[in-house]
Length: 250
Image (cartoon, rainbow, N blue to C red; front, side):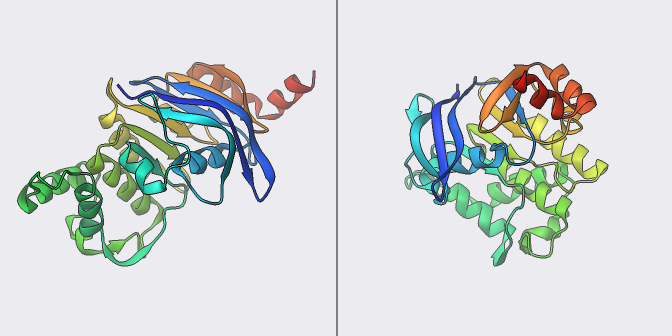
């Protein structure tokens, strides 16, 4: 049971405060969505939780399974069970998809356990077929020359193969057409279960038509200012973020 608990998190970039006393709890088995305008701190949250060195945590904690992981190195946070799907996945020329994912899985396995190539490729091809990824992509360099949709499919493939405890999707819908959005969402939905939580960060309600959240949070100026069910996302889509701004100013 992997619950994410973020408590009183304050994050700075070059001495500029971005998150201010931010708190959030996502219970195991639930999908929570965070929406908000540009500059509200959504991506800062995801990168700070993943241990990006440019995002300095001044105060607060973030726990997974009751263990605070703030201050750990990114690879240690990943091994603890947190997976981050980036808004803009990076390209890694010279490293094939197959070798990249295999190395990531191998790093999580006890040295005493066996890791058979035949079993790995059987599972890899199964997941690729489910995500509509051509099997020939296994030999291609990670994200090198990929379209936006191919990059996002590849990240969901990584997530499915690594099988993390908790997943953060940072604007995964960015740059996706309808068909790619549907395929990626199906991949995410296939991983939903009572033992895994998801935090979905998005600008738009359309993603939440495919990945239906248990709760929706509105982020403004580094804090959550409103929470509700999926209807809140529809209200934001209809009224825009100025509605929240006017409400906060009142």
